[in-house]
Amino acid sequence: MTKNKDQIDRDYEEYKLAGRVWGQVPQERISKIRFPRPSKEVIAEFEALDDLTTTISDVLDSLGIRGTIAGSHMPPLLPGKKIVGTAVTVRSIPERKTSTQGYIDKDFIQMSTRESYYLGEPGDILVCDFGGNLEVSNMGGQSVTVAKSRGFVGAIVNGAVRDVDTIRNADYPVWCKGVTPITGKFRMQAMELNGPVTVHDIMVEAGDLIVADGSGICAIPFDLIETVLEKVKGILAEEATMRDLIESKRPLDELRPLYRKRYS
Figure: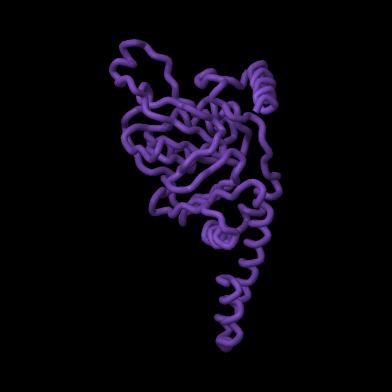
């Protein structure tokens, strides 16, 4: 723990000197700043594949990993989008004080998306956990402006967002539980950045590979990314063969082995 804290302290000071610390979140609430990310080549291979989350979901099942969220629980704001990138996480809790009193007391706003963007890297995906709360917003139009300026490729929000028209006009992919006009300012505070979070009913860690499309969302643990990629490519190649066999009206005895192989 001490070694980890020392590393975070060094990283924090380095990022602060580089102008990458916004200051919304106390340093002690940042679990890690630097962590491994998949290569651009691996990301590109995932992006090139079709029907991605459905096949990844099957592979995660075969590996004993609960890592998939159905799109019916967290639909995309922009249908037809697909994103692949590294998770950076933020876990928030409700403020105990009323929002009105927070305004009166001129409290410091303790939301954290800007902090996450400046500590993150291009190609990252913000993953917010506010317990599925649908009343107040985790992010909105200004947050998206910062996200795009920092090279983020999308967001997964276990809660609500606002400024939906602005987000759609910015062509910024977001998957979320719901939408709201109500600000999260003085209503929520960030408790941890880049620690484990809950999204719907799965755990996501900073460094996981997030893949999201029209069918849903998958979170692949970092150490399984390349394994999952190879298995997905193998399955898709077999399905292409099966489609050819079906279209050419081949006998069922030629089709059954391929079907069994995927679901065995």
